[in-house]
Amino acid sequence: MERASEVGRARRTRLSAGQRRETILEAATEVFAASGYRAGKVSDVAARIGVTEPVIFQNFGSKAALFAAVLDRLADDVRASLDALAGHHDSVASLLAHVLRPGGDHASHGPGKHRTLFTDAAGLIADPEAGEAAARVARVLAGHLADLLRRGQADGSVRADVNPSAAAWLVLSVLSARPLRAGAMADPGLEPDVAGLALRAVLAPDRAVPPNER
View 1 (cartoon, rainbow, N blue to C red):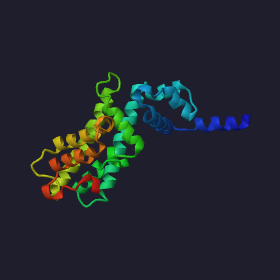
View 2 (view 1 turned 90 degrees about the vertical axis):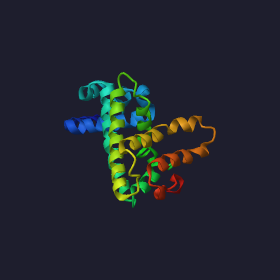
View 3 (view 1 turned 135 degrees about the horizontal axis):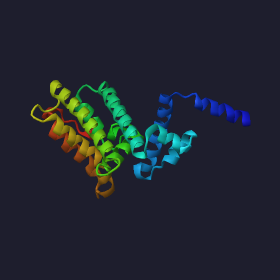
View 4 (view 1 turned 90 degrees about the horizontal axis):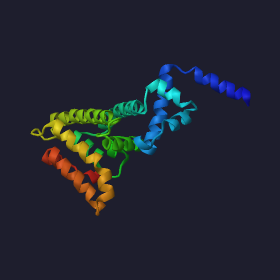
């Protein structure tokens, strides 16, 4: 048993600095997705990968910096996810209807943990520690959505008279406020109508695909 422990320690020490950071980021993503930024503990991140808390701080400096790095990776993952989804849709209109469809894993641009992190970040904009990172990831996502909307204007599925940046923030706002509606809206059947209103504001009249049909 002691020999196995020694082998395990040796393997951990052979990780490069980049590999160590990536291992920490993966564990931190799981912890923050499960508990949120405020309740998530650095000690839980350390425990997941079998290191001490000082190792986490040596690599990232603070809990806020670690969360910022998780959000930066989230932004990269979401952009890649949207680009991959675009390859499966014949127009930006179809892609937006798919993204806004209630109840799907894509509802906040990614799988479950991404959706949870995105929602948590949206509620942290005013936080003195994590607010700047939360605002940055929102700006990055809005910028990528704006690029998609410009592509939609080029393919004729997005209205030519809308400002792509303003429309991107509209779409992002609909997505980020979805947990609020889920918890407070008396009739959950209204959610497709909320998404439909956003689509009708953005898409060309003949391309407004109802989000519950995609």
